[in-house]
Image (cartoon, rainbow, N blue to C red; front, side, top):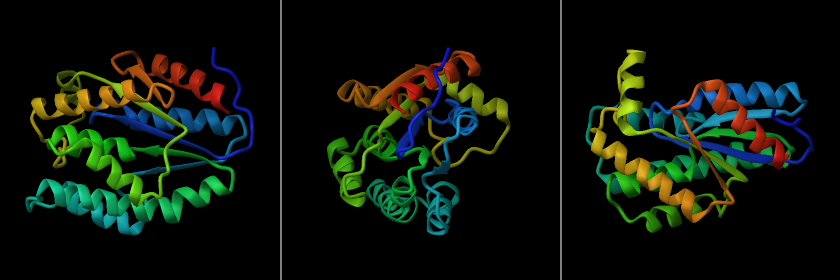
Length: 212
């Protein structure tokens, strides 16, 4: 059973994983649990957590024009720089729990592994953009590319630019994420996202409770 959320300091939690892994569902469940235990939660996402981010998200995911891989990486970094400066850091300074859908690990996985750019260069770009801010905990929802695609298709939602990529792309992204988790085991919690949502949620709550 998950413990009770304690403490009053700010905490930065990010949810990562391929499209269809269940990040939105788990963010909703975790926010509900944290608020039940008295924590103020700021839930946000990248790209799209600010008005500028909404415009960048539209360009990146829904515009029909092709985007060169390096330009794509720079747009994500620009969104991240503004989002951290205007939303994330102020919330952490207020002692809130920032619960965020995607952060710099997404860029390393998608633009690094997925687009076959240099992962270290992508990471360094994001660290410069955010003045070195790393999450206290990164929850990686791990799901095979085929299973994730089946979930996306079942939702019947029109795929965005990333979701429409082939399984080979998404499998490279998955391997990129797992490599990140192996490199920073103290920051990452890797959860098998093929399990029932409530099982996944309980595992996440246990880890978050231990860090509060």
